[in-house]
Image 1 (cartoon, helix red, strand yellow):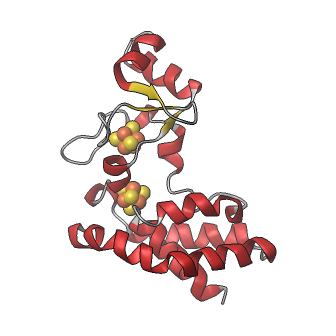
Image 2 (cartoon, helix red, strand yellow; image 1 turned 45 degrees about the horizontal axis):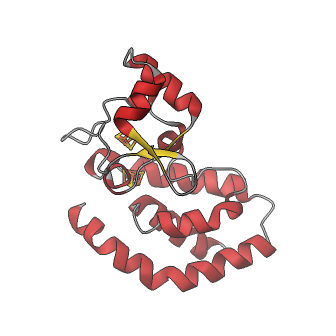
Image 3 (cartoon, helix red, strand yellow; image 1 turned 135 degrees about the horizontal axis):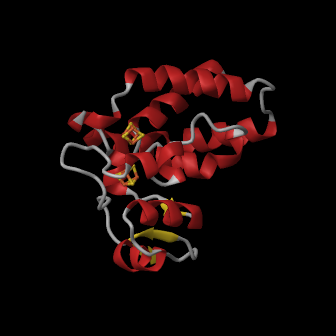
Length: 163
Ligand code: SF4
Ligand code: SF4
């Protein structure tokens, strides 16, 4: 996995303009069964992917924390939400709560998430490749293929399927 992760930013950059064109076309002409296709591609890829050997999302980019995330996670720490915010979070340029630092504070050396059961919604949903109306998050996906090998492969498979 280390070598895959080392190569990924370069490979993704090489595919960037091809991917951008592909998503622009997809938005204009979206297959009726796109949600179904994405579900299938996502499930097949994540059957082959062991996120515990990767954790690149947790190491390189942090999730957004919604108010519900803050409430739930701080409660699990028996901490006041404001104390949790002051200890772990900051507000980014878009006015969202994000981690003060990456790799994520809650990531263990064994790549396990220490708050897995109560982790942010964004972590549960990353890399969003099984999301409905996937064509609407193309800008986010263009970024995610640079850090997530599974998302990279899913987009490659999409291009093969929808030539
Ligand atoms: S979701 Fe993607 S980046 Fe995150 S651990 Fe799994 S394969 Fe790696
Ligand atoms: S909260 Fe857990 S799943 Fe989310 S980035 Fe941190 S370690 Fe990863």
